[in-house]
Length: 318
Image (spheres, rainbow, N blue to C red):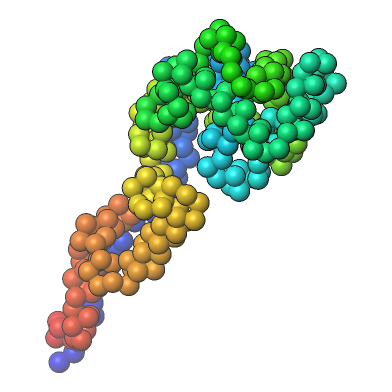
């Protein structure tokens, strides 16, 4: 019996191979939508917080930050190696005052020399006394800055009326406040970190109540899942959901090594283990995700089934 020649033709309906001409059109439409939304909604970004602006708006917070940097309780002490400095007191207070000694009054220069002449224990004791006194003006009673919720901002008027064994710390804090308000301090920090001009500026701001309170107000802190939000908008960079989970929920994820470890483990699972585990690797097939890429001709599927059974299509028609 002669074999019947198969005249069946298969067709592959592929979005990838047949719709390239639509991509530029879709791209232009997306650009048009983004431009329209940009004009209609505006940008979620707020004006940048600068040292000059923050020190002018909240001078009491600036003074308090100096006291905490000198007594070793500021936020910048939590990970000095990550911030690229071994001693925030020297980097954020003493070094700027030394660099601007030409602009300091005789009394301010004398206060700096008095502080430098004292031993470390005495320096920290002066600063700690001043720190605790400032905290009492906002009702914290030595609980430390930060805590849960927003941080109260001390009043400069109340700070100026404080008395105690503060040594030269109040004068030094007023000197830093003056340098911050006239714009010198931010310029100085940018000058000493040319590879990352905002590094020390951001650290300085992080030691003051303004930055944390702004983050809390806009839902941008860790416990508020701030990594996946934008100021003024609830939804932000959704693709940071996985690292946000590692950073917020997993043990040790909030520090550098822990964050790298958990994200590396997650990446290892999805890139290496997921494709190798039977069942897991078939999830995209069960979900029919391939239909997002191409559609298969039913006749082609039938031909494949016959071919895979070991019997050729031509032989089956004899």
